[in-house]
Image (cartoon, rainbow, N blue to C red; front, side, top):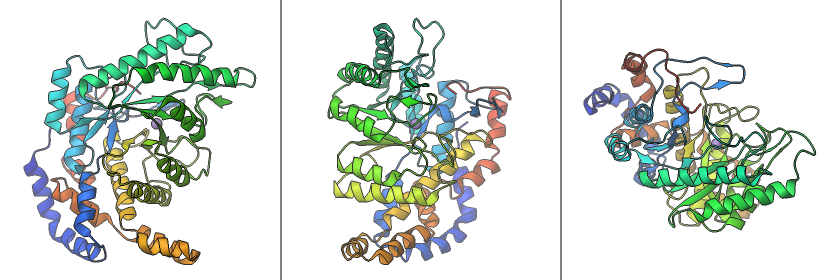
Length: 424
Ligand SMILES: [Mn+2]
């Protein structure tokens, strides 16, 4: 299904007078309001193809119905999200699940839904049917050269699929590591991984980026071979100028200061992209902004400050992606909430009085520094985000319209109750 413009306009007509009052009030206190709205409209967040079905835990999975059965279905889902919020205009594919059978048809579908192909993701954290070698003891780090070669070849194949579709980046996330002390020689594991990554790096087209994603623990619980931002930065630095660190918000040890990590990676020109989600304990993959919205704002505050310092375009300078799992919510509603939370945090960061903050920092005026940041955080910028969405042709209240139109029921009618999305 595809949402008609007319339906969205009717929905907006019913809400416009209430919205206008809130917008006029909020916009009154924002300097350069048109500049802020233009930046919000340009900002697009890629939806990963694996986040459109119900996720699960090792204890079970409770499927929701009407889940996408194919790449075409997944694009249809993201097309619906993008029609509602005009901020989800990109899809991040996961190979082997999303290998297009007909590249031209998939590109035409992307154009129909106004979607771009964001970073492509390889998968060497599980074995695929018919695969010659197993990744049980790692992939790019493996002690056996033949296993490493298989994983290298897979990553190069992913680059080729991405190239055909017009993507320009590869995200490598490795589950490689060890579960017990003594299992792995850390130096050999690092060297093997670096050597494998170098082989993949050589296959990158000149305009491509490689994102090296880190994670503190899970599925390996003693060591992970790309375990933190320092290790990722080490690989990215040794690889060369096309390699960057990717920050997934859920991949840190508890209470890590992610905003500081982001600030320094940006300063070094080595921050490549983001995987947004939220967590209470570990890699919980919860809805972005559902647990720690202040942290999300502080991260965006550093992003805006750091990108402006380098004269970077906010929308295109880094890769913006969601990486989440939905166990108890409708995945599409959850994604609408995540995108909204990201847009709110970005809008708040855009409204920080940077000149005043710089002055307060220079004067060691700690109280003023906190006042300035919290002034932006506590200002209700939702009407600004809604206005940007309205001007771009989106819905004033995306979740409400999704429910009003019974989108999930329609998808169940179209696809069936018992469908299980691939790639979960
Ligand atoms: Mn991730």
